[in-house]
Image (cartoon, rainbow, N blue to C red; front, side, top):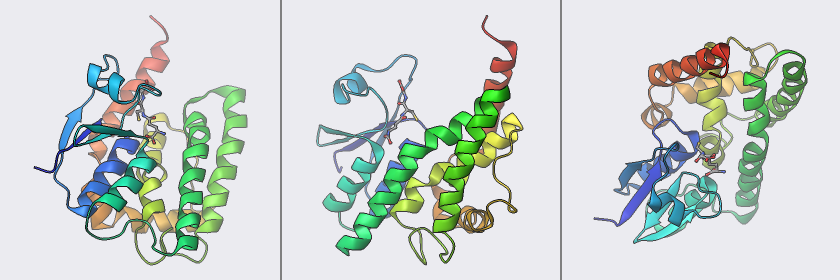
Length: 220
Ligand SMILES: N[C@@H](CCC(=O)N[C@@H](CS)C(=O)NCC(=O)O)C(=O)O
């Protein structure tokens, strides 16, 4: 028993990032599915600042924020390194992971907003995707030849965006606009590591379609 518990949600990209890191290290853990409509006392006490999942509990001590948790896992447990060893490469990986965290809300918003607001939001989302596309110009993965910290951090753009696009009918990513990004995404989705660490596509598609329906029905 490793004394590791994860408070999370099966379909959450942030939660999946942490599970992926735990699996790379071969750490056994207990997954505790949270209900965000009715947050547990354990979650509220473990992450009193943000009250969000994921939270890792290691021997009872809580750590919040998925990227912070992955770095902790990388330092504390034996196994393959997740972040690069070289300090410069590590700093660059942190830069891109931070970029993803800061910019993803704009991409998410563009997928759900409507009308004129959406046209503005799309412009911002395209800028973010263009930056990612450019970063992937001469690379197989963000991590170089293999999946690394930034590819784990990028699970939302790699896996979730396409599903939300299908549910909402909003198209942000095309191979004409973002060829390097699309090439990365195709490789990414075909990786065993990715397949093993993502939730069911059907489950997410059903969930997002029900959200689209709820938006269309308007407030009750
Ligand atoms: N920056 C955080 C984001 C975590 C996050 O957004 N968690 C969402 C679920 S995916 C949550 O707990 N939301 C509940 C709330 O906002 O009350 C991380 O990377 O851990």
